[in-house]
Each structure stands twice: as C-alpha cells, then as structure tokens.
Amino acid sequence: MRFFSLSDEAGQYAAAALAEHPDALELHLAVLRFGPATVRALRADLEELKGLARRLGKTRIVGLRVEPGPQADPRWAKFTRLFGFTGQRVLQAAELRLD
Image (cartoon, rainbow, N blue to C red; front, side):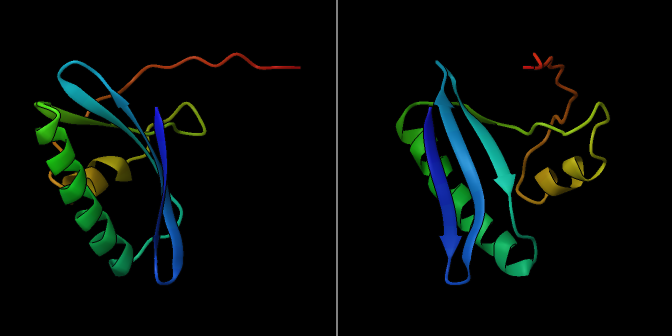
C-alpha cells in the first residue's frame, strides 16, 4: 500500500491509500475538509489517479471507506457519483477489538 496526504493552499483536505490488484487500484479515502475547493482538488487528483491506473494497465479504480458504525452513510453514493463512480454497494467488514 502507498499512502498519500492530499493538500492545497489551505492545508490538508484528505488522506488516501492505494493498493494495486491485477486489474484495479484500490483507493481508500478519508476526506478531512469539505467544500467546493475540496471537490475541485479531488477531481484533479482523480484525473491523475486515472492516468496512473491506465499506465499500469488497470481497468478500474475501486473506492472504499470505513464507517464508524454499523450503518452505511447515505451520503456516500452521492459523493462518489460526483466523481464518476458507479456500482455503489455495501461492503461487509469485521473488527477485532483490542483490550
């Protein structure tokens, strides 16, 4: 996995991690600041990521996010569609609590 801090002139707006799979890049994204400037910056970042994926011969980018609770965030589908992602689905995960 490769880790990235995404920043603009106002500071960090997101943190990301990328993992490479045979046909895809797996993108983990934590957006720290919202607003029009963040959306513009994320769109530019996504264009760069799409270029990287194409150069690596990937056919897709899969975006993931971990929710803090058991319920899906209803804003996720709308947010991801802003950037052209489709096929939103529920991902099951389990956690191991440490004492």
